[in-house]
Every structure is written in structure tokens, then in C-alpha cells.
Length: 155
Image 1 (cartoon, rainbow, N blue to C red):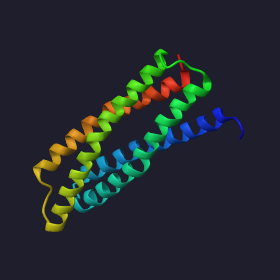
Image 2 (cartoon, one colour):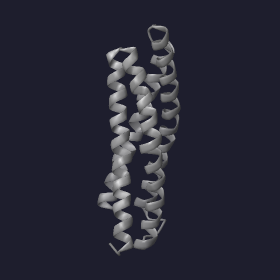
Image 3 (spheres, rainbow, N blue to C red):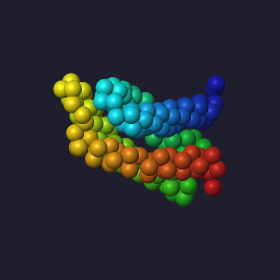
Image 4 (cartoon, rainbow, N blue to C red):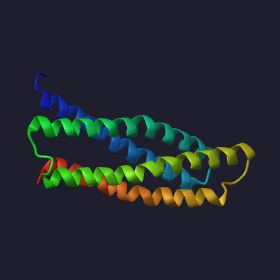
């Protein structure tokens, strides 16, 4: 594969898939664990979700920015094209939602593990954190769908 554009595009697509798939998958599993009410399952799932987000969302997010910028340059697009600016804005929106989500997940994990270790139910604070986590996930999810749409159709 000697064409730098094709190699960059492959890396960009793979990292987008990893970022979006992991984000959606971890959200689903934590949501399902939360709905189960099983404190041990919630604690275990929250621990794995935090780890997965750092490994498979944060890293690919950085790769997305780097390969996206390189693709703009290699393909000869202008940085002031509307679809590129909109994609960057949507990426920023997703990031602004994701950052507090990771913090919420870490606090949720800690509360769930403490409740599990004490043999207690989850505290009321957990439900408040889970609600905020759930609500912040929607704009990020919609932003990612928008980014995929822009990348495919490049209006």
C-alpha cells in the first residue's frame, strides 16, 4: 500500500470504527448492568467500561484527529469547507460530552465497588451519576452519527 491517502483513510476508518463501536458497546453494557440492579455486576461492568474507554476510545480519538488532519492535507481539501468545519464541531461536541462521562464512570465504578464490598445497595448518588452519564451519551452518539454521515457523503 504505497498510496499515503489510502493508508491514512484505512487507519481513519478503523480508528473511527473502534472509537464508535467501543463507545456504543460499553454504554450498552453499563446501561444493562445498571438496569439489573446487581451491585456486583454493576461494579465489575463499570470497572471494565472505564478501562475500555481509556484504551479503545481515547486512543482512537487522538488517531481520528491526526489522520483526519492528514487526510485534509493529502487530499487537498480546504480547512474552511463547511463539512470539515461541521465534522470538527461535532467531534468537539462528542469530546466535550465524553470527558465528563469518563469522570462519571469512574465515580460510578468507585461507588458500586464500595457498595459491593460493604454488601449494601447502591447509594442514591449512583443513580444521579448514572442519569447524567446516560443523558451526556446521547449528544455524543448523535454527533458521531453526524460525523459518519459527513465522512461518507462529504457534501
